[in-house]
Length: 212
Ligand code: ADP
Ligand code: NI
Image (cartoon, rainbow, N blue to C red; front, side, top):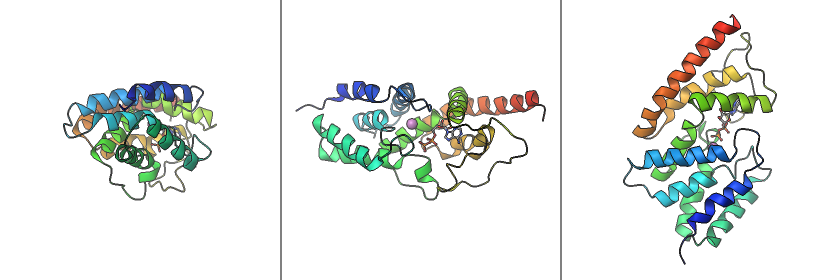
């Protein structure tokens, strides 16, 4: 039986319609587009594995679903129904279970080339103009304040402290401005350059307007 890749997109779309934390379906669409932009320069990578992982990557996230283990089982079953081989299922699950920022804070998990591409694609969507918008959208949803000059950014994040909010502006210093140095592929590093500048200019102007 042929792999039903064309059913992946509508499935994910239907499951992600109601998110209001900045992890909705248009994030997934941008990640898929970023994968396509990166993968043209990575001849060794399997596009089916990378694109499928990009579509599915946020369905098992521990901050979005109550029971990630159960969701992992659901996604695996779904892939089998779409006639993905066991080997492909393993490759895809290895990516989506290990690619997140929080899972790579204390030690770097070694991802496959496809995993490195999807991780870059996801991280690119956390920086630049979209990254700014998502940080305020996410922070607003969870009641974080925008800025407080008295609360200093933390130097080091750990899996324990990562989810404790400080301020949205601090989130840029603690995570977003550092993303460019964690990217795997040259294509993503190149794409990150403008996005980095946009964030830096935004923060400079933000503080000018704030008056401190
Ligand atoms: P990952 O899923 O790769 O571990 P996150 O879920 O932490 O990464 O980040 C997803 C998006 O949510 C990013 O755009 C990120 O900037 C935003 N975000 C995460 N934590 C915060 C926070 N404390 N304040 C503002 N935005 C946040
Ligand atoms: Ni994502």
